[in-house]
Image (cartoon, rainbow, N blue to C red):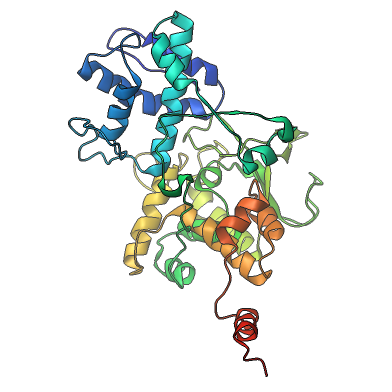
Length: 378
């Protein structure tokens, strides 16, 4: 599946040329949505690639939510749209830099903008750590459109955990075996919602010593597929294949006994009654599309409504389950980020340690350390 931007009667050529460089990657869809918003703003402002300046791009970012020290005119994203948050502004800045460098270079126009965007900076210690032969790096690409944050570095927000007692409360108020299975699977496996709603029955190896030979315990394979009819897709895309009807590869998540139990409860009742033969795990149970694959948005809506029925504070989001299990694993392993990384299929143990490796201020070790510093040891 590919994404591009259209006028009423033709393809928007500059956007299409840039988006083609991301063919087959998830970034293409993300950048297409950011670009279509920007192209509409350009039309309103009467600007083109040949005439836009870096100050115009800063004005646009101010109009969509950035803090810029200049007049930027009327807000562009007005209700019901919301201004971009910090992460969205970073994505927009990267998208705009790549878009204009690509098209200015391809068309040989606007040398001033191209020079303003093609700037460099000195590498930081994390840059050198990540790079092969990082010790010889003298410079790194910089983006003048990225919003500068206080202290010059990105502030990492503490992840939003589930309210206390969320899992048992949600299980009591859900209306179907499918919904109960979703709550349990998100709680016990750190699955992302795209990976969960994109599962096929062949991806499930819920028995000991499955034929794939990659995990002795019950487990599931999360495989990235572009062609799912509900458009659900896994975020991470490791290689996978089918040999003699057996899935191998993909992201592997261990399955708890509760996951296996809720799966069989759902499959032997609701799934058996409404399955449509498409092979996907989660299906719609009512309405004109009964039996068709269930979407990630529908799963989010189910959790939101269940949270309200249970009287839980805030909005229950699927990713909060992933934060919660990672935090819980760090607590029971005395802060070992490598175990949490393996359980949650995180890309980096360092990231896990930075986000979740906070000390427990009521633990015996914490209290003993303070008493030692205060000179209160017995």
